[in-house]
Image (spheres, rainbow over the protein chains, first blue to last red):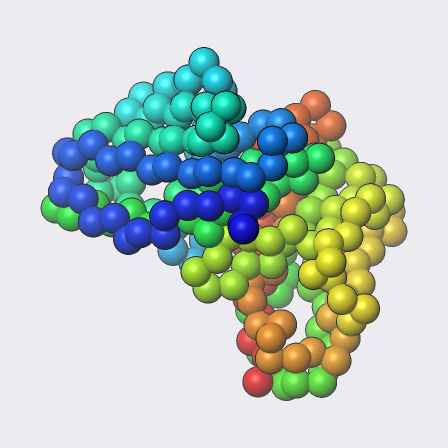
Length: 108
Length: 114
């Protein structure tokens, strides 16, 4: 079983829609959690950290459920510029482990 | 540009040749990481340094791979006797002592082994 699992997609979503990504992780010793964004043929960039209390940054909301070992990302009012691959990332023993990523395409 | 830089950006080599990649981290960052990313996959951890000390190496890092960070600043990743399976994007990232989890990635070196 992979340490971090994500639905690879692709998700093709009309502009303005709400889209949700899910991710599960296998190591209960995981200490911290993140979503990174990666544009085509570019490097990953930190989108946001994920906390149990949930956190929001503009149109983006991230949530962590430690009991279920489940992480989510919600994008509201999607924009064309949101098209990218979203990587779920988990810190285990001071090492970041990345999921395979979920590819999102926003359709005009 | 004060971000992480990598050189070269692209490398095409023949099987069996040696290649070396360089990474220059953000200047005040003491941690430096190497990852490998293949098509359709997320980055996979290879190794990392804190200052000049190499603290961990992944099982993915075979004997043909070696990384150095001799003065705690830039780092090099060498692959000896390259194989076609080494074709990938090699990403470098750095982080500061206060926030090691926030890793800033360089643009990567794309390696193609023919």
